[in-house]
Image (cartoon, rainbow, N blue to C red; front, side):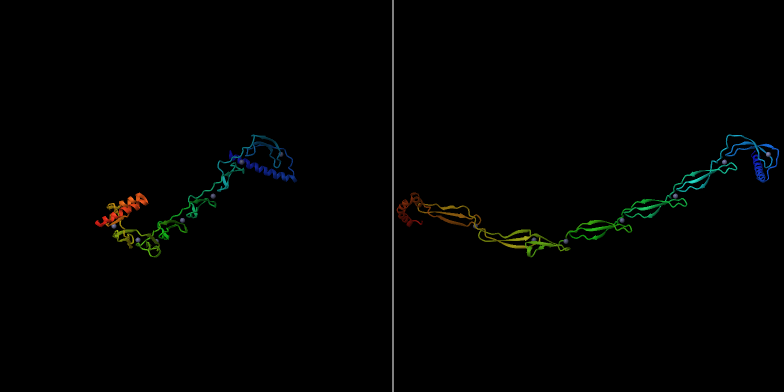
Length: 345
Ligand SMILES: [Zn+2]
Ligand SMILES: [Zn+2]
Ligand SMILES: [Zn+2]
Ligand SMILES: [Zn+2]
Ligand SMILES: [Zn+2]
Ligand SMILES: [Zn+2]
Ligand SMILES: [Zn+2]
């Protein structure tokens, strides 16, 4: 059937061609007068034309059409295949074009559909385009793997943080009184950061205590062998009595510093007697005054004293007043003299 159609179409084409030629010729050379000989020719439907039967004169160059009978409402419509041919490849960012050509013979109609842009396909493994340092993030770059695409994306590489050395370096020595500094430098190349730790002060290294001279002579001192710092303190004495003082004689005491051994002697003045209370040694009599004595409880030394005018005769005179005293004296004095001749008062 298809073959027949083809042959028919070919014939028709030739006929039309001839007709046209003849007609063109007839412009100068009109088709001779003839009796029309009509023949019905079936035209098959195409993509855009409906099928019809045409009744036409067969005389060469005539072309007279008697009748056209349509056989369908419309043309067949194009027959596009399910799968098209990409006429423009999609790239990462631009849509491509898929072209569908009508499969019916003789039809050159095409339609296109977009091929969606592919989007970038970045490599799984990036490339370090900027190395991270201790404190700054680096950059990892991922290139699109599709041919011809130069697109890249980046991701930060986290800053590494410092990597301080385990072993420190003394950057400032400690002294007797001031702390020093131990530095632990960062081991990463190009980084000048360092962590520091304090080295405790050493404290002084004092020598032996010795007696101070000059201004601080009443104390002792010791000197730091490192910084020459002087430490002073008053003496701390141990007191030794060498000769204890008595009531009448001075004594001697030795003072020795228990820290620096500095030593000196001191005279202790005599204590003087310490008497007990006066006691009556000889009681008063009529004519004789009272005699008293007191004794030192420490050394036994004793002293006597007479209470002048304590005899009774004198006392009576005192009681009687001025005139009476004179009288009494005049009366008793001769008697006293007589008695005193015989006694030792
Ligand atoms: Zn004709
Ligand atoms: Zn078509
Ligand atoms: Zn890309
Ligand atoms: Zn560092
Ligand atoms: Zn010191
Ligand atoms: Zn001392
Ligand atoms: Zn005494």
